[in-house]
Image (tube, rainbow, N blue to C red; front, side):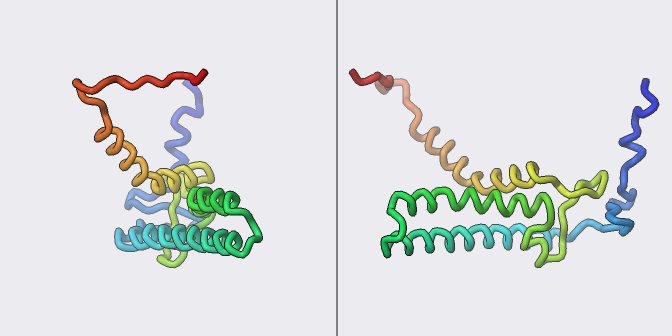
Length: 157
């Protein structure tokens, strides 16, 4: 075995009292209420900023500055884009909801930030969870029964 075997275990930065060291300060876990309010506020921020971007795009389309197709593209892309932006804030620094509630998400073992990709992935998963549930439900309700005629897709000639 290597001399470094288990070094990651010995190098952990957490206290056995369920705290995490960050810059020499022992941080205790945040209360459940603060964590939920931070999540709710982040969701409100995502929705409000999405609404602002959609409103600006539709207003610019109405006065003829951009086309309706461009406004539609902006409207469709704004929600995932805002989820990615706020996910990056969550992963790399602190999200607005966390800043207002006085909490921060850190890796429990080492006290480091969550990370860019992990934060964005988490926010995208949460943002599209309702859509995923509806798609699965729709697929289940639209599933063919035993007595229905099978559907095939053909190429047009």
